[in-house]
Length: 73
Ligand SMILES: [Zn+2]
Image 1 (cartoon, helix red, strand yellow):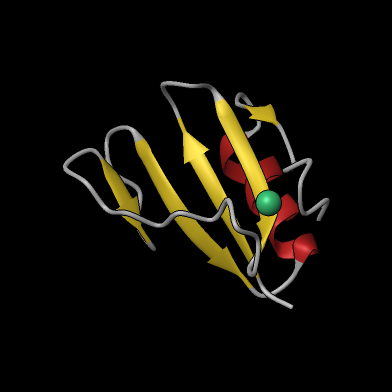
Image 2: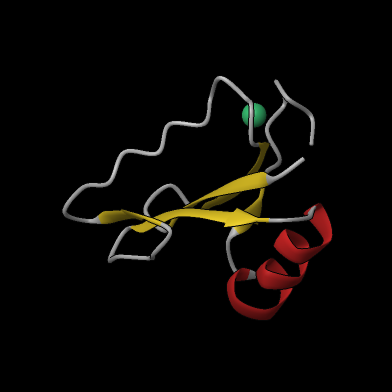
């Protein structure tokens, strides 16, 4: 099981999903990246939930931690 995180500075969220969740929508745009962070944020992939949590603590703890309620990672 891998995980995707939706980091969105504008919405103030750090949302963790299981990789197969239907709410994982990895569309890159001018301001939002996939596997990279742009001005608004982006989608990042992690091998474990623990790694996603560690990245949050280290770099994004000012955002709201909001795991997806659909896939319940
Ligand atoms: Zn989800």
